[in-house]
Length: 131
Image 1 (spheres, helix red, strand yellow):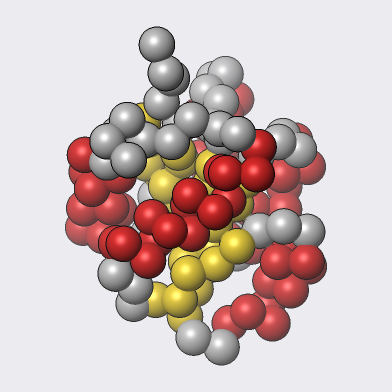
Image 2 (image 1 turned 60 degrees about the horizontal axis):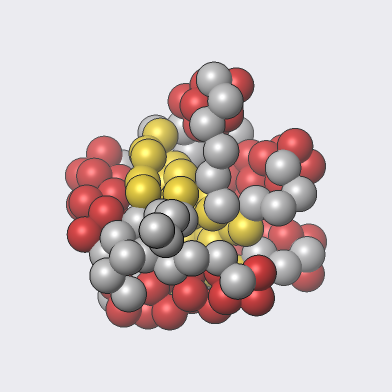
């Protein structure tokens, strides 16, 4: 049986976060959401493991880029997709040079799914069941 890819979605906007979580779940991914760095850290501290972190740059008291750096240090196999506004790439240049990808907001779901597939494909990770 093929296992589901586990995605952690971190974003301050509750409506966006909820809609994105539901959409990715329908695509066959296992999705958990968090509103900020602290909530994401709580999930990881409780032993939750994820293959992919999908985060915005504004996620509470810490920049999403910094949160992604910290999580990548703790879990080197974690892949990262940043949801950023046009022109914000320079703020996370080191992450992008390290293999993180980004999608510019606003984006369409097929565009995001393509980026997720690209990030997961090199490692041979299972994709969402419906993909």
